[in-house]
Structure formats: structure tokens, C-alpha cells
Image (cartoon, rainbow, N blue to C red):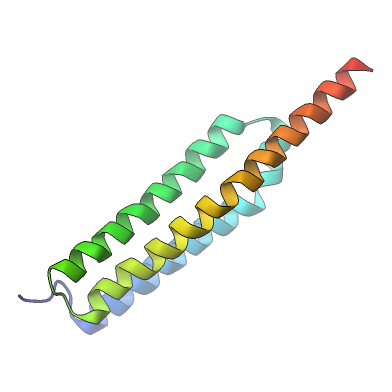
Length: 113
């Protein structure tokens, strides 16, 4: 089996993937308060879910590379950012959902006054 990418190319791809996901996740996390205060739950969770799906697809690509006996650098470059993204964002999902719910309850209480 020939490798999908050589070492230098995979290093660049892995660096780009990791940087892009880190920037997207950081931006989404930093702007969460804006989405919460505006009440844009659907938009936020659509973006959030799309990043989770990107992470899942990267992890699946890494697993396929393992099963196809690709070199370590190839499957590691896909599996690591995919697994980190998926696990991290899925574990933070209940926290963000609670923030949205708490803010909605706060708005309802303020309207009752």
C-alpha cells in the first residue's frame, strides 16, 4: 500500500487542520455570549454541530487510514484533531445548552416583572 501523503505534506496538512479547527472552536467559544444574549440558539448549535461533524469525519478518516495500513504520520494527522475536536465539543455541549436555558429563564423572569 502506498502512503496517501509523504511526511512533509502530511505535516502541513495536519498543521493546517489543527490550526483551522482551533481557530474555529476558539471563535465559536468566544462568541458564545453574543449568541446567547441575542437568543440565536439554532444558529449557534448549527455551527457547533457542523464543527463536531468535521471532527467526526477526520476521526473516521484516521480510522480508515489505520485499517488501510497507512504510516503513522498519515493516520495520526487525521485521528488526533478529529478525536480531540469530537470529544471536547461533545463534552461541552451540555454546558452551552445550560447557558442558553439559563439566559432564557432569566429573560422570562424579567418579562414577568
